[in-house]
Length: 142
Image 1 (cartoon, one colour):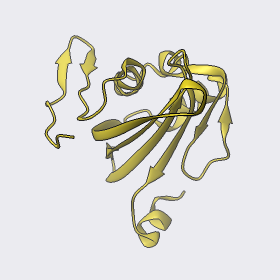
Image 2 (spheres, one colour; image 1 turned 180 degrees about the horizontal axis):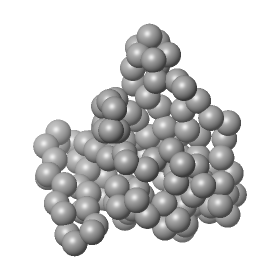
Image 3 (cartoon, rainbow, N blue to C red; image 1 turned 180 degrees about the vertical axis):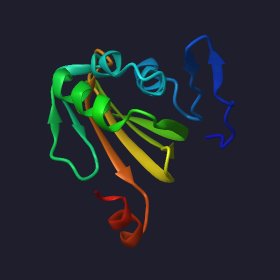
């Protein structure tokens, strides 16, 4: 796996994402749609029972709950995925681990995303982890 990345390129209102080691269109679209603040479209990448495990939150289930959370919490964030790896898991599902940063209006934090995609390349779950010290995490909580 190469550690080099192609810089994110702006095309109209959409940002094209390139992640070293990741070619799955669903994962790339997830980041592109979030960075374009198109939270409804991002939520549509999940299965009907899709789950988002976000920091400091109970699991969010279904597109409506995910879109509402993203609208409230992700506005103004810029996701900067840098590299990732994928592997096939049970039942033709794909697991992808992506590492990068999230820039908010107030701070930047290292983040990892763990995606599980079904055989139809829809997100069944994504777990977002903040990669920070315990003290840094306490400072981020509201």
